[in-house]
Length: 101
Length: 198
Image 1 (tube, chains in turn orange, green):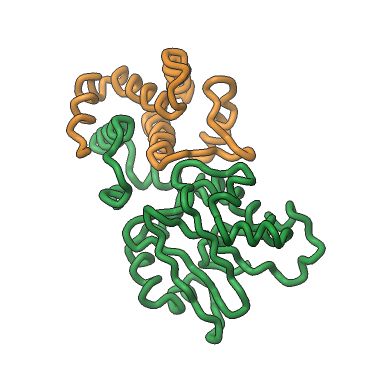
Image 2: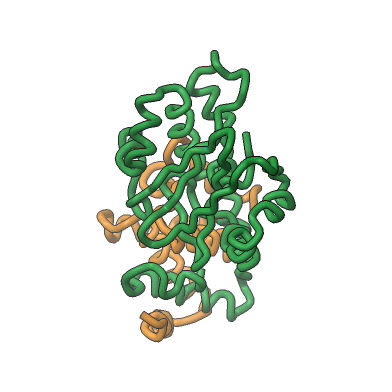
């Protein structure tokens, strides 16, 4: 995990760069940390190149520059999950709708 | 984070539900384990927020007027240093003295002052910590490597959705000449929760 963070995540710059304060990563809510861990986990466990996630993140940020940064992580993860054939966009949507409010 | 259910006011947002849907799916598929995500979050919990809290404490140690403001209105004094945001409302700072040691727990879930301490460590959210810190704080603190002398009173503060507590540790002896930057380096996350003494 740490090697991936060191080598790829830390280098992310520009629009896709992780929010930082005093040089440290900042999560404003627990779910943001969960998405951070999830993205690292998917890339690592499936042996993907981090670039696979990063380019989807950049596309997600481009698609809606005003939205909260980690919401773009959700969009990028959604895209990755769909592209990997793990679930369809409809399945993801239906699953979210089933989560207790 | 399921133990947060029902404690924080307000329903889950659409964003939180989408996040949870993704996490559940990838866990079900066996691609990512909850433990892996925990480990990533925990690694960062050590670093994200506590530095903010350390700056607050260092300022309080160095500036008596600031310390008084911090004890009078934690949220406002912390905002003076530019820290605030979600879970940062109603932060109450409690000061350790030679006769009082303060320690923070959230018996209901894991309420925690994110802006100054980052995300809570896993043990803070664990049922044993949450129950035993109230029942037998001195014994639990000793197990955690924090020996509080018998003649020092231990005060346990139960954080809630309304109030988040921050411990102001005692300034270490022999640091009278230390500057704020140096002092901040001496303040640990655990000291600000009250499970360690700097």
